[in-house]
Amino acid sequence: MKKLGEIYSSRIESALEEFYDRYSHLPSLYSPTQYILSLGGKRIRPALVLMAAESFGGSIDKAIDAALAIEVFHNFTLVHDDIMDHASMRRGRETVHKRWDENTAILSGDVMMIQAYELFEHYDKKTFKAVIKVFNSVARYVCEGQQMDMDFEKESDVTMARYLRMIELKTAVLLGGALAIGAIVADASAKDVDNLYDFGRYVGIAFQLRDDYLDTYGDASTFGKRIGGDIVEGKKTFLHIYTKDHCENIAEFDKAYAIEDEEERIERVRELFTAKGADVAICAEIERFTSKALKCVERMPFSGDIKERYRQLAMALGGRTK
Image (cartoon, rainbow, N blue to C red):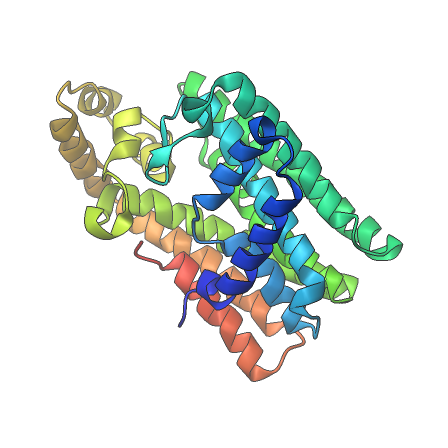
């Protein structure tokens, strides 16, 4: 299957070029926004908007502003996340606050949120009201998920239920929201919008769990970043929480994470994950959420060919290797 972002790539990139041209009058504010958007990425979220709209008979031309709004919002969150995480690199390039400064990054991020709302203004009153309702709830959920993630850094114990809720809010709801908004633009029924939103949520959770798995068990040449980074940072991922919950001797768990040499620490913690069955458990959870997404597909009012696109999307995101 051709990657989702590639299917709509030319339309998304040309629309972004037009978008940049609208904001060339104040480079000190808008150059950072163009910079973060030009770093690329998979463009999954705007592609989902376009895919959903087309699935319900809508046009790409009508849906493109909503797609851009979702992509602009997503990149806004990245600008602010990088500040909070003190990150110096994003997609192999300097982060906005490193290339400019934190004040500029904060303000440029703020204006990106406003730009997203402005893009939605191009729709008629009925459509605007419906998409904004979804967008506002999704935007708030993403903030809640980010706060939970930061809270976890200061907590010694995080339950699996809270972790799954965090990745649902921080990552999955935006995928669901993108699909729902695309469906709304194409005048889909409320029932179909809700079903597509759920499909995106389930796929998004599987997507993030697969990312957790690959961070420890993936191939660095295809994963795109260092293997074991979550272990080095002590992040409370599914693997971390499951293993800690299944350790009869917590001292063994703490000792593994206390190893000073990073490569040795990664290897020892990975061995502990495997010994406690965390690798098997996370794969089963990925399968569970992928299966929930596939059940949503069966409820979609689409032809067989369109349903197959959604099935392949669920398998590609839940079972991806990079």
